[in-house]
Image (cartoon, rainbow, N blue to C red; front, side, top):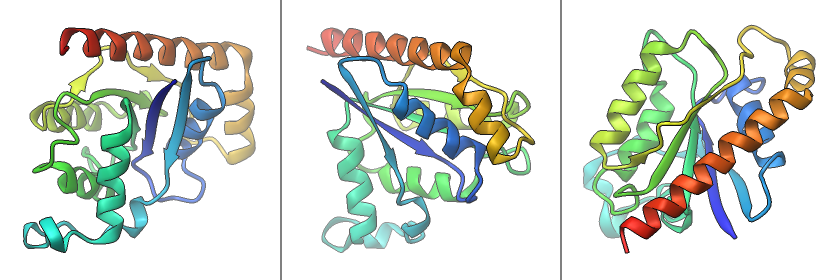
Length: 181
């Protein structure tokens, strides 16, 4: 059983990115479990002086969750043409750790307009040595209200797209595991 950690870069209660990662968890193909990380809002601001034995519990829990996962999926909104501060803060907690090195990662998008954030996030994750899967998932949810979001995510074509994206990611994870052995 492969364990995938899904992270939404949004703290909004009605976040389309959070709805997308929750839908990915519900549509995981057999042999794959997707767990949604929900501690983004509890992470303290990264400070290199707080690493090692001083690592806060919330940050240690994130580092452990990434380390234990076989891969991660990240879905984030675009704020002012960039990655939201909360998600960047979470990634900063991983910078000097082994958790990100060669860890398979896939991006998922709830907006077709988030091109700047996509490029910035991919650059950050590559710099951190994540093994970034070229396959991405995009389901346009921008500007939709929660009932509409659930209806769109419940459509068979979108559920199939999620299963196929995750299956492609599973194949990428397995290929990475084989090549690094």
